[in-house]
Image (cartoon, rainbow, N blue to C red; front, side, top):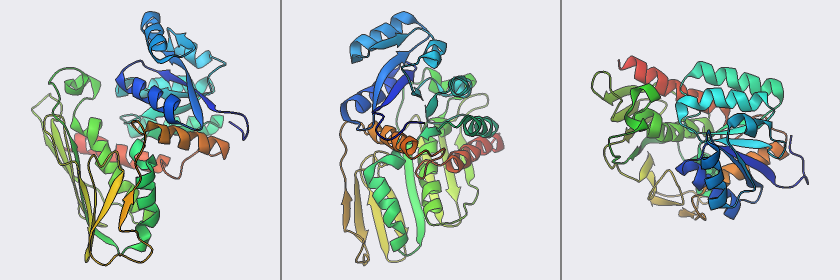
Length: 327
């Protein structure tokens, strides 16, 4: 485990795509608790190019070389999600802490086995659901119990993507639910968890042809409070999220999955609740999940109060079950 005073957490990245670049830039330009020092890809030339572009001292042409590196303490897994489970296991067996890009895996059974392995090895494994680590979202969750119980949530994540590649490939677990549906589901799960409410099971509706991925998905909850949650890989959807109760409402403005401004919309706010929460972030905000991960290690935690294993499991179960149940 990383110890107080040991210095910044030394990160390696598995996978050299666009999201790996965003993580690297955010951490190395804005994080307080860590530094990316290594990149690994299946091809040495690709790893070398990434390292040159982003100024990293170490580049590995295989994931096993990253796993064996004595210079790396924690690994950010940024490959396509069908490959997550095997790569997480590889890193845990090599003694590395792991932060894995969403969705963590695509089978609940895989998540259970990996969490058990991490605990057995005394290692930290978390899903990189960055929205939960943004300062504005943490402020919202901390203050939420001051409000009367919510009655409804409306949130969606959708964007029009070119109809090619991994998102549209059933063999690679493509589709809207796995790609972006996990975001609003995480939001609902986190709100329920913060309020100590047992979650129901969503009604799931998918837009897909036989043998193809879901182009859109909707998740409807009726209790403990209602929610209409949407996802799409072919359509731009509302970027604001709305949470409402009796005589009150608030909106997470803009890209709610990168929350920075939470605006009070109406009703009599409790004295302890500010009219607005406005906490802007630098860069893309991925430094906050990296810093939270480092903080968990400093406190010798094997789970996170903001990204708990149980919520990852719950969301994975909703998507896995919904995709199976919808045929």
